[in-house]
Amino acid sequence: MNWESLRFDWTQLRAFLATAEEGSLSAAAKALGLTQPTLGRQVSALEERLGLALFERVGRGLMLTPSGRELLPHARAMGEAAARLTLAAAGQAQAIEGKIRITASDVFSVYHLPPVLERLREAAPRLEIEVVATNDLRDILRREADIAIRHVRSTEPDLIARKVGDGTAHFYASRTYVARMGRPQSRADLSHHDLIHFGDTDRLLERLRPLGIELGPENFRLGSENGLVAWEMARRGLGILIMADDVAVQTPGMERLLPEMEAVRFPVWLVTHRDLQSSARIRLVFDILADALGRG
Image (cartoon, rainbow, N blue to C red; front, top):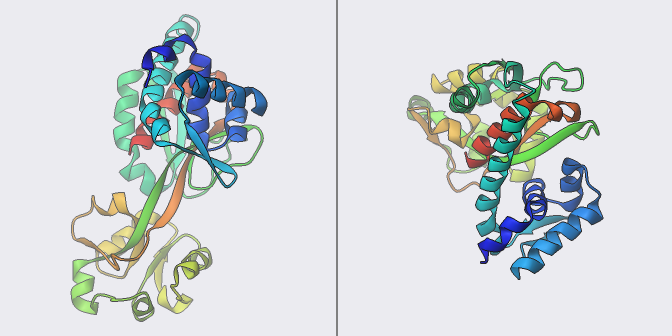
């Protein structure tokens, strides 16, 4: 790959990076404030310059080719460098200080955000960061938070949403529960076990049915709106709970059940108000979150 040619046109590389992160030309154009034809020409120009196909169409979206995947980390590195350059210039008139509110679920706030906060403290020690740990969708439009981490995409036109990754989840139970109640050997076996819910039980049941799991309210006799409380119930051996895999591996004594079952997948989106992108501190926090969570 001719990496030397990339240094001549950051605009084309930025178009590639946005398209890779957003998954479609239309979403990338919206994120960059460009028209879709303009963005498409920039991506095509980069492909022509490199002599490589960087994307292939899958349904209504775009998927990176092997060449595109090879280019992506280099593009991200250049994007971070460009962001630092912009922030350095903006710092003459706009200090990286003040208060920022980040909202995420209680589980996400505990298990994912602390390492990112360390990076933020190093990058901008004068920032005041408040984490709003809630499973409610805080209203960015009303400025109840500056940046939200969500598992559903926001469609409001005044919001900027960037998908930074996908999480996976499985059924987990403590070793004490398995020793007492036995290990389910099939999805059907789950109907004979105690399960724990957090959030909307009806919505959970709807998500499980396409996976071939038929459960009813009688299986969910314990639960909480608070994910940390529900996880502690499971850790204490009170039942089986669906939990993100990267959370479960951090919790000793928890065992994954039905290992052959496909994962329950959920997206991770970063959301902020379009107007807030003019704030240097919001851009800094948004970009650091995107990079850290994307690598996680």
